Image 1 (cartoon, rainbow, N blue to C red):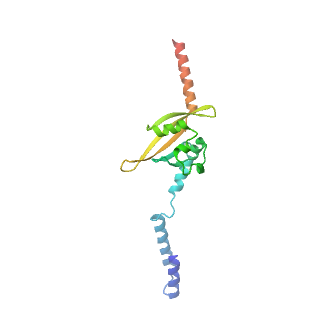
Image 2 (cartoon, rainbow, N blue to C red):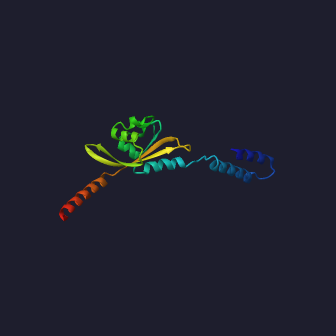
Image 3 (cartoon, helix red, strand yellow):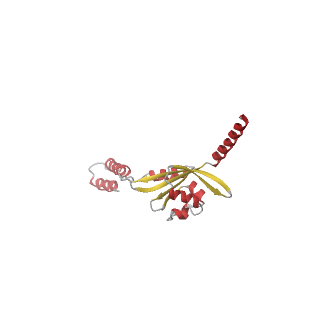
Length: 171
């Protein structure tokens, strides 16, 4: 690039060895590019990896209902692939789960439990709703994070049954 051009010019003049000067100029240009222009930005790579590694389902939906992001766990639950959701509205993506779609449209609470039926058995999910807004306070969209808690619910139901049985015995 620039350093090579200067090196060629100075080499033909014979005034001094241009190698140190051209190396310095190249290093300054690369440093400027890396730190100021951010030629290599690791943030998008780290973002994508972090979203996919998380075991919980994550869906990000903008104010107009467009699905902005869906991680692998969410795609697995919804039985879709990332290619199937490109350019889709949330109603199209959540078509197999109308009860979940209804909760996503109407609920504004930060956390709640959702019960979904899949393959003739009930699954429970803990759903967190996070509202996004700009600096002016206008809503920009929502993130939905869900975690399967079916095993916990079964243990909880079993504990309740045991407590009832114990209370009957102690009476």
